[in-house]
Length: 343
Ligand code: NAP
Ligand code: F7E
Image (tube, rainbow, N blue to C red; front, side):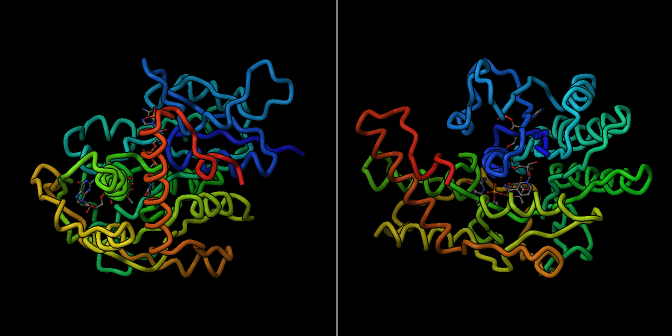
């Protein structure tokens, strides 16, 4: 039996890795994309299938987490076995500028989806992209039993979605899981998150195209894993007999400064010569230290990360250096094989 999955946020970092993963498992994948005046499908282009292709396994539909009617139509029409709700206004700093919009999409968007499942009566499993940000200043290491102390509009919105997911599980017997994922990165990470901002700037500095990198708080510590590893954990949660919530993390923490050390050392440069502090990148309230305790998922689902901190930093530096070099040689739209080919 071919399984069907419906993914929101399919054009994002995790959406693209999850799509690859599910296509390899022979799923039929339906993704919801937003209408934009510019193309927003770059992370999916290598998987795109012509609508005239008979054996097509990937289908893209217009929709938005603000549009409950369309979400209900899509759930009803695709009758998915599994739904992965990855869409969100996902940037913590931006959520302080757009608190209401972040609440509308990152919080209420989840309720619209859960209601779409309930109203359409679809027999589907539901994955909610919850976040370590929900722990805020809860003492580390954080696990499924730690208290939630959100420190941003984004975190508060994710926490609302977390509890709505748990409530629909209890109230309506929907197979709904929260994956509480700690930070995960990759060469496809959005360009304004700190890791990617660093590796992209480093590539330009190395090639003599940039001489300064402006950053905010270098003392913050994060538990950084590799996005490709983490999408497997999402899938595993929905393959169980019972729905549950799981922390996904590496169990190691590093400061932004340590990320700079590792990345610049690897490229043979000293970051102190290039990095300047700009207060605009500080947050009104910061999450100082995140360290995930992923003991439960390791024990119950047998999941553990494959890529560690050093390897992650290096693979991101390598990818951005290669991309920048290709751009310099005029291959503006060149897709790097190691980045985009399904392994
Ligand atoms: P991302 O790269 O920022 O992708 C976000 C996705 O959501 C994009 O596809 C975006 O579409 C879509 N989206 C945004 N607003 C939407 C709307 N109103 N309607 C429909 N789609 C909308 O995020 P990610 O890093 O892949 O993360 C995936 C999910 O996990 C997010 O919910 C994020 O908050 C959560 N999370 C991420 C991490 C992490 O470290 N990466 C950790 C924990 C939880 P466009 O391409 O059109 O913008
Ligand atoms: O910041 C500091 C910043 O924006 C990490 C999202 O995927 O993970 C992500 O949220 C740290 C923070 O990620 C800059 O203050 C310093 O302490 O890369 P980030 P995040 O805020 O941890 C969680 C788990 C999610 O769920 C989110 O969706 O780095 N920092 N200087 C900076 N951060 C940025 N963005 N830019 C700077 O210049």
